[in-house]
Amino acid sequence: MEQYIIKGGNPLVGEVDISGAKNAALGILAAAIMTDETVLIENLPDVKDINVMLEAMAGIGVKVERITRHAVMLNSSMIGGVSVDYEYIKKIRASYYLLGALLGKYKKAEVPLPGGCNIGSRPIDLHLKGFKALGAHVSIRNGSICAEADHLRASHIYLDTVSVGATINIMMAAAMAEGRTIIENCAREPHVVDVANFLNSMGANIKGAGTDVIRIRGVEKLHATEYSIIPDQIEAGTFMFAAAATKGDVMVKNVIPKHLEATSAKLLEIGCEVEEFDSAVRVVASKRLTCTNVKTLPYPGYPTDMQPQIGVALALASGTSIVTESIFENRFKYMDELARMGAVAKVEGNTAIITGVEKLTGARVSAPDLRAGAALVIAGLAAEGITVVDDIVYIQRGYENFDEKLRSLGAEIQKINSEKEAQKFRLLVG
Ligand code: EPZ
Image (cartoon, rainbow, N blue to C red; front, side, top):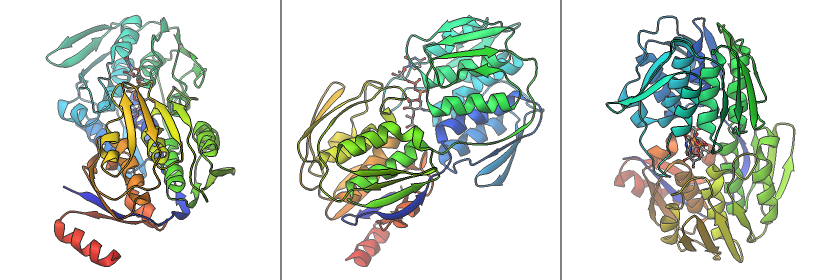
């Protein structure tokens, strides 16, 4: 199994380019099947989740032509079936976006129920509530969700919980439903807005994305488009915290600073300098970080996908910090790994009380999930000595060229496949 091996202690210095947003791309790829005309999507991140989503789409008959690592042409005029294979949903939950897209276009869809995952049970009851409200008959049969409707009609839907996935999935189905659908208590994430903008570029009529009320006037047909995905605010924030934790000076390029406001605010609170440019943000940490408190919330609050990253930074800060995870029920598993590097934290329910230490020491740790894995790499970069991170396949799901980008900032990190390669690295770094 591939691992990262890291020799910590180098401040990260330099510039890094951010890739397209994985969580926008997953919704946009699904939405692209809603037209029979050809769609060009650019600034795709070249990460495992995207590549699996493209395989799932090809599996139902979408013509997928990868122009470059970051651009794909799609044509869905020859889709043969509306049933997505279990092997794909097992690999990425977000293939459930095909449910809303297929239901919207063909009024019929069958997608295996996604399991839970490492950060929580992650139900999809709100997705199904929206489809039923639009007039679909929804049943669970042999582990799959079957949704079918003679025709989809407008509805007024209230989401009990703010849900990115439910907002996007229902928005897609409603885009081709008769009449005007209103969705209340919507997620406001930038990737929700990106999917809405993409659908509108295909001729949909969606207003209010980015607010908590989205109004959708259904259309008969959607047409060809060319679209470029927004930059990944979570990848950007991950590098910003890597700069903070290693007392570095990093210019994070190809970002939308507005999407990073909560992250930048917290970095300022813990003693970093943060400078915003049109499409870049510079983070400088010249002294020891200081403690703060943070609670994850739906956008524009502090993102849950940035919780492990700030947890690592606070583990090194002076003073005691409180981190409250209000979105998912199991997103502190990385704290056990961090404790093996010398962090002092107590997790009680959805709260972690972190007492900062002067330094962390390298250890062998295991990535429990995508964002926690990236955070453990940050810990390794800041720690004294050698850290080996197992199960990096999680990290590769959402970070393109992660180790290459870190090396370009002066990190001593390698992807390795064997003890022999680990030995070689140890000799190299001394
Ligand atoms: C998306 O997941 C992201 N994934 C997650 O990022 C992110 O953490 C999450 O939004 C929150 O921002 C993708 O976009 C592919 P939710 P999603 O529905 O849509 C509850 C990453 O690291 N809920 O907004 O699944 C749910 O249990 C991943 O890139 C219901 O109760 O998240 C959670 O407590 C990890 N019923 C809360 O809502 C539902 O039907 C928010 O979940 C749906 C959700």
